[in-house]
Every structure is written in structure tokens, then in C-alpha cells.
Amino acid sequence: MLKLEKRQILKNVGSSWSALAINVLVGIFLSPFILHHLGDAAFGVWVLIFSVTGYYGLFDLGIRSSIIRYVSKYTATGDREKLTQFVNTALFSYTCIGVVSMVLTAVLSSSVERFFKIPPGMHSETRLLLLMVGASVSLGFPLGVFGGMLEGLQRFYILNWTSIGATLARAALIVYFLNRGYGLLTVALLTVSLPIISSILRGIIVFRLCPVPLGLDHVDRASFRHMANYGGTTFLVLVASRLRFRTDELVLGTMMSTVAVTWFNIGARIVDYAQEFVSSLAQVFVPMSSQSEATGNLDRVRKIYIAGNRVCAFLILPITAILILFGKHIIRIWVGARYVPHSYPVLVVMIVPFALMLSQAASGRILFGLGKHQTWAAITVIEGIANLILSIALVPSLGIVGDALGTAIPLSFTCLVFLPRHLKKQIGVPIGTFLREAYTLPILLTLPLVGALWLANRFFYPRNLVQLASETLAVSSIYGVGLLWAYRTHRAFHVAEIAGLKQPPVPEQPPQAVIAVEYQNEQ
Image 1 (tube, helix red, strand yellow):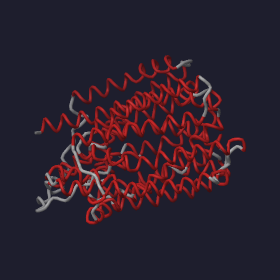
Image 2: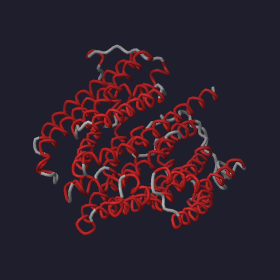
Image 3: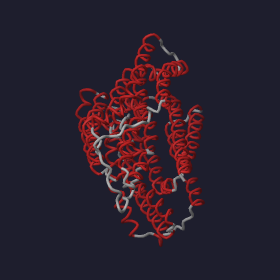
Image 4: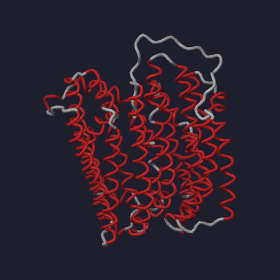
């Protein structure tokens, strides 16, 4: 059983990293290709509209996490009737949400130019773009039930491989049509239609794996209550995530221009890739901590807390060093030298607090796994509000860097002041012990890399992507050797016994695990 579970985890994580790698590689190639074919203004409109429709994710109301939880529960218990009722209730709820979001799209598209500083010649194109993207998101709500069912069945790899197929097909078609003179709306049509096709394919697969009858007579009030109660806190996390990380482009589009949105997005996109890489690993700590807490093994939770964050630090610290020291080269080679003065400061300002957050990526997952994430969710909402207020206050004087600082300052406060203290309260690990055990080794291994990167940056000037990749890999081999030593000597995952902490008794009834996939998708 243990080997089977381990194999399933490796398959899911491996496919997640494969999907992420494909997504990053396609993004590295496709973003500058689209930017140079569409131009700064049109690309800014593209980013702006997707930022606006990204807020439709709040309409999810935590339903997807409920689908994952209850599909998993009812398939495990073999309760086909409750499974049927819950799936149909979720499908009905999502369909209603889709209708509401489509009405909202129609209203917004009629006057979108009043809210944002869009070039006059692009008003009609922007309205059509918003209609197109909004319709896709609205349809994606009911179709998202199938993805949630697959996750509840622990078939993450099906989601990932269908995502890989859609990503590769989208990239090939966009290149084909842009090279033949097509424009913004064609790119948008391809971008929104392929995920719909992959969702339909997932629906076919999931109903072969777990056939469920569909119909309004299966919609159930009790299932709706379960769904609403369970998804409430997850909804707070969704709100917080949107406020924390998806308001920047809207603020710039409102207060500056779509060109400023483009400049900001280039630096922020690079940081997003780093975040996705770490988050795809950190998702495994939710079920691990939940299982340990359910059996009363709090000592194992503490070790997951320390070792999990150490592994996250192993990933994000060298990435941070590379982006700070090679960031100008990355932007210059990726999209062009003229973007470096605008986008590199955004990259530096954003990557530092994100490194603080991602080096503690296991902490948030553990809180979800223990079902003790309510306070943390409230704090992140407050952080998101502070983010928005600071961004609006700083943009007039500092421009896009002010917007980046609006995100960086409250995020740093949450990571440095709140999160370690909150975990100490919840699981009893002293802050000093946590910092020493989790970060001493990753920092020591990263320091030689920083020196090597500084020397390489001073004496070498990469002129193309191949030279940049070769130089980065050569310098990073220093870190790789250190990491291999830590792994072979068992220092990478070893956690010392935490003195003075007693093991609590095993609870009579294990608490429900909270599977917070929305948190992973939005971070």
C-alpha cells in the first residue's frame, strides 16, 4: 500500500513538473513572439483583459475544493447516491455562476474603455476580446467539474497531460496564424478555445472512470449546504490571492497605460514561473500533514514543516540568485534590450518577497492539511487590501516600481512577522529552531553560487539564449554539487529532534482533511 501511494505521488508530481516545464518553455518562446507581432499597446490590452476576467475566479466560491473533497470521500466509501447528488449539485451551481459571469461580461464589454486607458483605435477590438475571453471563462465553470472530479479521484496526471497537449497545440497554432498576418482576436480565440476542448476531453475520460447519471432531479439541497460550508474558507483564500497577486495590472491599466502593463508583466511573469515551480512541489504537503495530524503524530507534522520548507528553500534560493544577477540578460535576450530599464526593477522588487514566501511554501499547505487555515486566510485578505492601497498610493510617484513595492511590502511583512509565529502557535516549533533547521543548509549551499554568478556576470556577456543557458548551467553546477553532497550525506532531509515538545494523544475521531487546490492554482 505504501509503495502504491508513493508511486501515485511520484506520478502526480512528475506530471505536474512536466506540465510546468512545457508551460514555462512555451511561455519563454511565445510571449516575446506575441509581443513583437502585436506591439506593446495590444499586448498590454491582452494582459489587461485576462487580468480582469481572472477575477471571475472569485465566483468559484470554493466549490472546486468541495468537489475534490467529496468525490474522494464518496468514491472511497462507495456511496454512489451521494456522489451523484453532489456532482449534479456542483454542475448546477457552476452553470448558474457561468450565466451570471456571462451577463457581467456583456455589461463590462459595453464600456470597458471607460475604466482603463485604452488606445482609441483599439476600443472595439478590446470589447470583442473581453466578450470572447469572458464567454470562455463562463463556460469553464461547469466544465471545471470534470477537472475537480479527476483530482478527487487522484488522477492529477490526466489533468496534466491534457494540459500539455492543449499548451503545445495552442503554441503551434498561434505561431502559424501570427506568421500569416492574423492579430489579437485570433490569438485570443486560440487561447480560450483549446482549454475548453481539453475540458470536454476530461469529461469524457472522467465519466468512463466514474460514470455518474446527470439530471436536475439529482440536484440536492443537503449537498449544496455541504459544498457551501466546506468552501467558505477557501473562498477567502481566493479573494486574498486575487488581491495579493492580480491587482497590479488593473492598477497600472487604470492609472497609467497599457504599455506600462506590458513593462510590468514582463518582470512579474518571470517571478510567476519561479512561483509555479515551487508550488507544484509544495502541494504534496497537504495530504502528508493531514494524514499525520489525523493519527495524532504531531511530531511528524513538525518534521514535515521543517523539511518541507527546507526543500522549498533548496529550490527558490538559487533561482532568486540567478534572477537577480542574470535578470538583465534574461530580459534582454527574452524580449529585447529596450525593456530592461523598465522590467528589471520590477523583477528585483518582486523576487525578494516572493523568495520569502516560497521558502515557506510548505507552511501554508500544512495549515490547510491541519484544517487550521482560517486565521491565515484572514491575514492574507488584509495583506491583499494593503497591497491595493499601497499600489494606488505609490504609482503616481514611482510608476510601475511603486506598484511592485505595493505588493512587496505587505507580502514581506506576512512572511517575516506572521507566518513563523502562527506556525509556532499551531504546532509548537520555536522560531529560532525553525529558522536554523530549515534555512541554514540552503543558505550555505547558495553562497558559493552567488559568488560564481557575480564573477560570471562581470566577465561574460551572453548574446543569445544558448549562451545564457550554457553559462547558467555551468555556474549552477557548483550548487548542484553541494546539493548532491547534502543528499548523499542525508543532510538534505534530516530533521533533529525538537526538544521539550511532547507528543499529544491520538484523537478519537480524526478531523477532515482540507484539500486546497485553489490555493496552489492561484499562488
